[in-house]
Image (tube, rainbow over all chains, first blue to last red; front, side, top):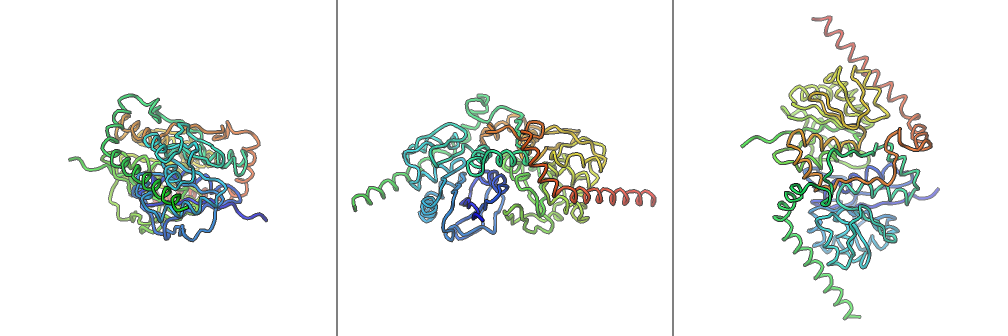
Length: 237
Length: 237
């Protein structure tokens, strides 16, 4: 009997929970697959008022086949935490597929795992991939070799189906899709900046303008610090 | 200042977590709204390998504006539990809107809250609404007066946007949609029985054929028992 394929989802305080709950609900239905949701020390994770317990200790997971990193506003603090990034690096090196949803790609980027490659990201954060030397791609699901990334939050569903097709075949993906009745019918067309009504885009931009400058600065600081570490490492070679 | 609008999501063992995590992620972003995820005694809930803790005790919630009931295979045991159904009935009577996702409509139906009305449900369970005197509707989101119901699992997103438009306006719904980048692009067309490739539908039917007869029998037994209770109640009048 073949061993189950192991998918690890590392989560952290302030993750946008739908970034991982949506792919999780799809991936747990794939035969011969185990999905491990993990946090540092297996500590409970708070996310938008939901509390996730009984998590796997990230440090104790030796290897995985698929590393699937979700995003969220908590991503900024997550990449400022060297210990967390070390775990991402360590597991990423063992994974056959590196994957992410939303700003999870910035975590893979900060971990130095996807330098020079194309990745998706939430539209409001996408350009920040470049500060880590990653090429931002506006597509909803982006594939670059063994790197499969989804755009903002709900793109995690389209990403999950693409991933299932890759690891278990199109038929498996379609069976899960039918079981979860994924035949979307949005009542409005506002899900991307290029199709949202202008006053909606303005309202969201105005709200983000309060939060984003500080977050962007912190992400850039992480990029500088890690580039510095890399330089020091090279000097020491 | 106006009091926050209270949305209660009662969950239970074996809920399909995406039935509530998806609407939850949308609804928590609506201004002046509080979303309470609750279980009997506030006990942790297991769902497909995720463990939800820190839940509100359902019995302690006095009233709500919106009751939003998710579905899942655990729904069968949930409606067999008189104490749980009593809480659904009690809160449902206080709610301005009765709502559900997936087989959550069977819970509202079993609680006797939506008799004679039109409701959505997961395609594989939908016809069972009729055993409770509820009219099955194949639409993805169904409105019947103050009853708003979504179809299977991922319909919860389209449902949530419809609900947000109702309680907070279309603009609020579109802003949340943009923030969560909901511009779906399924890689396959297989999300409904009428559009899925025939061999996919057959495979899913074959798998359900193992599980469904027993589940359907149990749901029908609940319906008979509750109809009996109602008759006894009337005899006592």
